[in-house]
Image (cartoon, rainbow, N blue to C red; front, side, top):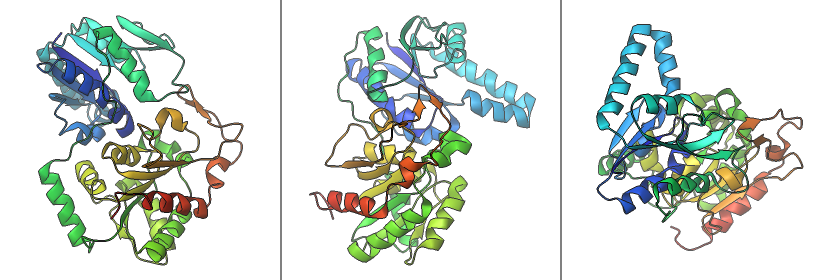
Length: 362
């Protein structure tokens, strides 16, 4: 087989988790052609990936929004998407959607080998599948790589892959210059939001914004750090809380960059401090040091990958109810997010200090 399609309609982290699979395919079949069907919001994650030859950035969720605006536009976009995928004549698809609609469409488009996970019998249109109740006790990346067995490929390097174009490097440099950032000293990124794919439940994954402010102040006073506040426009209220609570000045880039520009800016950091979410996984893919906060989600499954204590520290409080996000379902929190609330600023500062004390710093 020479033509493969990867389907993943989820967020930044999930898409990055599939990049080792794409690389394994290319390493084993250098002349293969790989298409990627994702949502519009995450396209920038794979735009410059040399393993991906064609991107179809229009998920079911995107189409629902378009249909809400205009039924005619929605029909045109959907038919255009189907036509574009069919023209590629894919021979196999890796479907990470965990539902039946994408594999049904793949079948109707003539893709004969359909590979994925059978969750709650939603894999009924798959030809090759692994039965799962959820992802437990090992990382999602490792679950994804298991699917390569159906095309007789052994996984190789499992690092997440992300690539920054020269153009975006220049844009990032100019953004930092205009913001008054000096090209010297410690540059720290703080993502006090993150978790956009959770929608209105994203706040359940957030360490308190006021503590991010206190931590940022300590990094400025103790290390002379330059602080960047990062996030998209929907996280404006969180960023405002951090900035207005700080005693010192931070550079606010919230909602002021494209996704690809954000990636290039993270590439310039010495360390990123973030909740569980897309910026964290971007930093991991760029081999940056990270301190992250995990509450309802199991860091064994969705945390920094590959795990590396020299580069990544996960802060969490293990309660008897942790993690409360299991088998792709979130249970009601009866303890007012104690798993995050119990992480104090001193612990976070100690984690950052520990990573900064290691080699490869400024």
